[in-house]
Image (cartoon, rainbow, N blue to C red; front, side):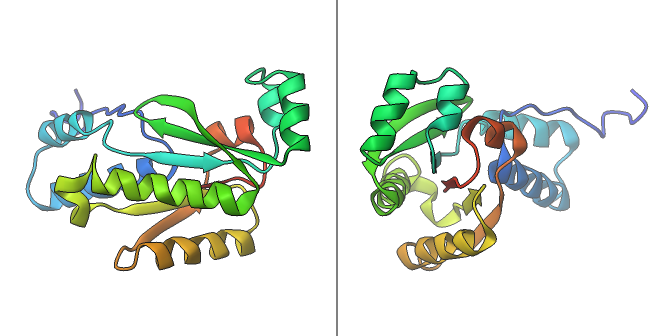
Amino acid sequence: QDYDGKVQVVDNKRISVTQRQAAIDAKALADAGWNAEAIRDYLMKTAADSSIYITLSTLYYLKKGGRITPAAAALGTLLRLKPVLQIQGEKLDAFAKARGWKSAKKTMLNAIEKDLDTRFAAVKDEMVLGMAYTCSEEEAQEWKQEIMERFPGYDIVEGPLSLSVACHIGPGSMAV
């Protein structure tokens, strides 16, 4: 009320680098002359227009949080399984199980490529790719390089995973 409609509240269920991108998009729309209500409506309309894939270094935090059983965690650890989780919209779901880091990263990159070619085909050239992590900066930069090699021509937005996600999945995770 104090700002005569120039300030709007947006809860588009975004998180981490996708939330950052929503803020960048809002700024670009404001610079293009959109009013606050139109920007809010656009951000809400496009709330589910993102895909996030995350792989974990350990199953410990999923077990600790009750998302998997202790038996599943033990077996997964023994088999070197790396779960790939997916966030589309506001839901975190299991996407795939991979054996080892290399396979998990390949699974995530294949998934993003499929999303770009199908779900986002009409706006593929306008998409922004992001990567997030709870791993070391060195591992994160290696991950960024892998993404850049797979998707030349895209600028890669990067940042640490938000604490609201990181506390559930633990250290050593990577996302795209």
